[in-house]
Image (tube, rainbow, N blue to C red):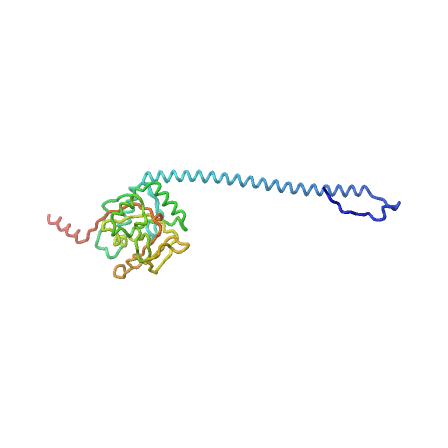
Length: 303
């Protein structure tokens, strides 16, 4: 139903001399019809182009999703293959200036870990006359489920890519837990009730970790410190980092000038989730002093 308002052509319509130009009216109607058609065509073209763009974008999204799925499958296969081969990828300790290193085999990987441990111990000035030798390595043997949980936790952090190899500063009072850690991973049972909070303490310095670990044993772990917050205040009740951070960096529980003249050596990182650390292996080591070597040399010379 349409409504047309009333209109009048005036009194001229009754005038015999009034002449309606029909041709002009028809031209105006034709012009109006053409303009309306052009406007409709323009709108139709616009809608057609919009529909085409939507179809193109949906096709691209579908294609990208397929590529992501394919890459994810390839990555999962590669991770599973590396896990079966005993390969692992991580960063060397903080402050070494080293680049990310990936080893093709577990043997080569642990060789690098042993060398890094001995190098870290040699750099400690108080241990200049002591030599350290790694006698054996007990590789962590975690289940795929545990590794997936750890990886999932790390990927959900503020800075998931910032992972580094560090030494576990714990186990001194419960050595039996070390075996459990390399078999099942860290848990809240391994938390230390330290002066900077209740969590897992790690150090990039082997000497620091050795003083807080079972003599002759040191646990190496791949720790995701993420976005670390520097904290100087002691607080035994602390059970989480500040909002926006994944871990805290503290002066260390051994930050005594008599023990460590260089305060940076005693620094420790504290994490508050056991899924932020993946145990790599347990190093068993022994130490000898320079006097022991000299006595051995004299003994051989006497023969």
